[in-house]
Amino acid sequence: MRDFALLQRRLVSAWRLSRPPGGTEHVRVVLPSYNLGASALRHYAYRLPALEHRFLVEILQLARVEGCTLVFVFCQAPDAEAIDYYLSLLPPETSARIRPRIATVVVPDDSGRPIAAKLLDRPDLLDHIRERIDGRPAFIEPWNVTGDEVAVAVRLQVPVNGTAPELWPLGFKSSGRRLFAAAGIPAPSGSEGVRTVDDLRLAIASLRKAHPGLAAAVVKLDNSVSGDGNQVIALRDPAGSPASARTIAERVASMPDWYLAELALGGVVEAYVTGDYWSSPSVRIEITPEGRAVVLATHEQILGGDNGQVYQGCRFPASRDYAMQLTKYGQRVGRLLAERQVIGALSIDFVAARDRGQQWRLYAVEVNLRRGGTTPPIVVLSSLLPGRYDTYGRWKLPDGSAKYYCATDNLGDPRWTGLPPGQVIDGVRAPAWSSTAGPGPAWCSTCCPASPSTAGSA
Image 1 (spheres, helix red, strand yellow):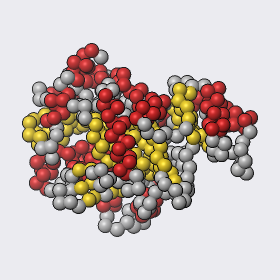
Image 2 (image 1 turned 90 degrees about the horizontal axis):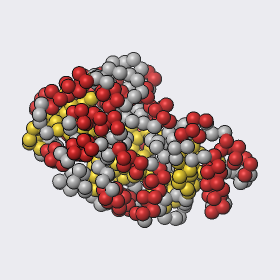
Image 3 (image 1 turned 90 degrees about the vertical axis):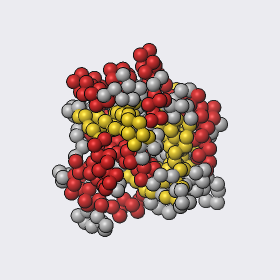
Image 4 (image 1 turned 180 degrees about the vertical axis):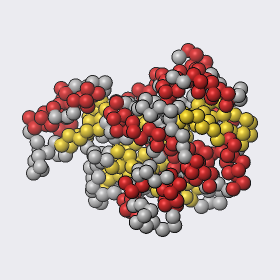
């Protein structure tokens, strides 16, 4: 870690070279190393190649940063059609200019380990990356930073644009609740530092005493992502009457053994927030290596999965009813994290709820010290249509116009399995969706309602 700390002193100068318009030759090593907790890995291990390939949107940034070479490190080579697709979004002369500045290093290992760990097993590939850097200023762009990513940085002698591993617990659910309290931001009623079944029972009993009409409680593992570490405990019987203490104890005891084992590492219990109208907005922030916290965007997240709490996509921006307030809250949290030496991409997730005739209530629910699902679409927007996010929640272009989008990273159809990537890309790009092109309209009608969804909860 001492060697790593010395390396990090080089980060500011290397990072500045990668700000538009660029000009000086430098290298950005894109390392989508997903160091996931056990619960998330159970669900996402088979998807790691696809998740790694989300970083290909970085190609679009080359159009605005002269002199930058991107070296992507993947466990599976991206298809040429995918790279061609991103380049096709740019003017032909721009694509031709930047294509030579895209390089890929493949670590052929399909296990569920993070790619940084796989790379450490291949000194020949580390040597190859060093040859690609060729003595130029460079830095690593990670998903998150653990001991594996630090070891890669030290071996390459390249700094990392990310939060040091010892600060990773600042993104745990318990730490987030304490951070929100310090920032004066409302959070759902609840308890942090929960580790045992007895802790769960006491925390739920405390919630029920403070909120007798509460319908449910949410248990969250401290170190989890995308809602996969969440479990909902119903506090009412099917008929709607309050459940007995014995029934609640039985529901707690019936939680999966693997979940209770991971809970021993820490978790929180929170009130299940409900309302006649409900949404799951988030704030995307970047803390620069210079220590400046910048709000990049607000989003409405679209959630799904078995528990209704797994990220499926997003709409930009968040509702105008509270986008400005979200921006202010994001600035507060960002400043506190910057003071604690956090660096890189992060987001703050919220719950927004209101009853008919009432104002929206905003609750902060977690800090994500990593690039999340809302990062790729804002990278695409800012690369193709340079502008700025204003305090009113709009992406403003220099001519004064505003741009918006809806995005998903869960678009799929069983009929696509086994098709060449080019054929799927052609189908998605088709001017009109058809039965052969996939389920576009169905997804869009779910993703893009005119207002935040009704009767939701988290």
